[in-house]
Length: 280
Image (cartoon, rainbow, N blue to C red):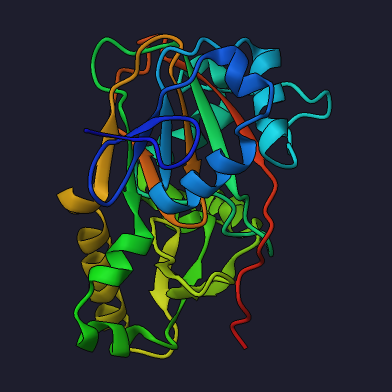
């Protein structure tokens, strides 16, 4: 890792194309003095690690609010617990799809900007969270691949994610998945900044207007390309770690871990600020 002091706070680059470890005390993070710098660094590096910062739930919410508009999953505003413990019911079952590469909020006109995950209880076996930088992956594509991708659109649906977990669902189950909004999105997102990122992941089920097998081949290739080692970071959790990632320019997944491991993470989210580009 290389220590960099070009902006405050000090940070270490984890890999050339993804990740930075932010070296700042909790009280410094919470007072908001570096909020603008952290947001700039997040767009540049994709994933920011705050090692063993030990946010309480209230502090996690406060830190999230210092970076933008906090959007809770619950009406009472509390943080969201992330677990695959079977006692969690259907929500835990849906969480199993997080073992596969994805981004959050494909069904929204404006996807969430970022998520902040903290570790309450790590798994003793597995349970890393992995990230890949889809900006860097796009930028490294050969020019002929870029030209072929421009203008292509993919359909994203809950069924794509859930078929990873339950490949032979009953028809009743499948029709429940179909009730969740699906979206047609460009494979290449040209952001307001002018940078481009790939819009892929396990929710993508086909590419519009081309042979289904050719479309599937593209999706497999792009997933394989974007998640190769230079663009990927795997975070091994310790109690108290916090990790912030740019949901509009990364994919993420959890590595498999036992359902009864007790692994418990807590998530907060920043509201989106840039809509998906029109697919018309």
